[in-house]
Image (cartoon, rainbow, N blue to C red; front, top):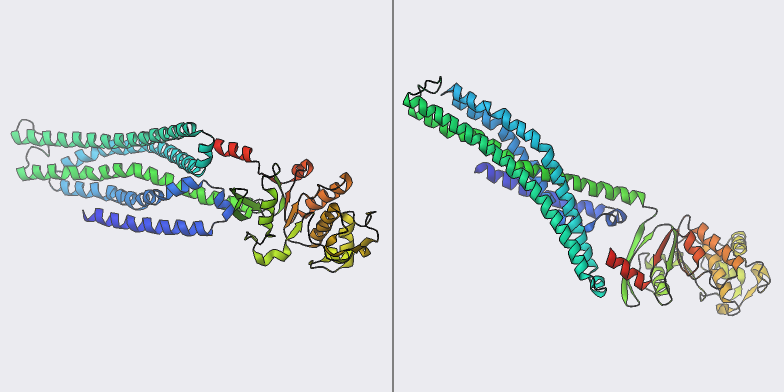
Length: 461
């Protein structure tokens, strides 16, 4: 009883420590690696992984120590009364050890299968809860209910397989223990009746026989305890593998997608719905969808041009390049309009940027960098405003947000703009709202805001 209390107290301390350690690790994990892992499986697993690991670290370890020492102590005590009785108990030991070896691999395989089934069930359940409004809107509740029922049956079946091995293991131990004790009792009884003369059993006092029969169950008690802990060990090993996989893969995912996944994750209301957007740290991302789906609204919110709080922060507003047909253009020379709010004042750099977007040879804007631009750019066309924004982008080094940058351009100029956006995306984030199939083709990622398509995809997930 004292041992059980100490074990329970130690397991509680281990569980608390493991939970604190897991939560601390989750807080320090890269957000991209964290989002790459099945959250439902982890949340559900946090309720059972610490207990399973505590059983492995404390309960199973104590059971092993008792299995190593308990039978030897019992045999030593019996040997003072009858070494033949002690030897008879020892002869039953190899059979039980052999059975532990035989069932060990089987129960571990089934425990791993149970853990995988549990993870799939938890992940699917959390996903269906998250998308429940979409499921209801698409009238597919019965279909998703049937899917969850199949997952639950799979998990129940895998659990029964683990329990069947555990019960079989315990049953075999009890069987051999009962047979061994019964044989001892028969030999002792025959010895006291004088019917059979068996060395070590026929000349014992009554108290000696009673002592043997009282200690014999204690010889098998550590085997019973170890059998009870054996399936818990398998569950603990499976839990350890699951946690190792989660954190190792999460860190690997964070490293492998550091350049291809978002450090900016936002949840934004637009056109009557919420969208969670994960943005890469670099690369060309296109926002697509039919007119009215919210491309420009989302783009402005991401860029912060409407004063909305975004993942980029208000203090970085000056480093963000905003490109659209209605950007602000100050009055003066074209050179001043291009260098407005840019960190560089190098005329050669401004000249190269203007040349790359075709502003220097624009027949409608004679004079090159000395061309006169009216306040607000009222003498510029929509296409020229777009190219002014592209040129500013080339002179800056922050993230880029472009709203239909090729919509009002001729094919040649549109090609120049695409090349400029693609080159800029090599070392920074470029997000473009567009209907241009060529831009979509060269984009690294595409976010489709089409309402119907999104609903279907979420319902089928």
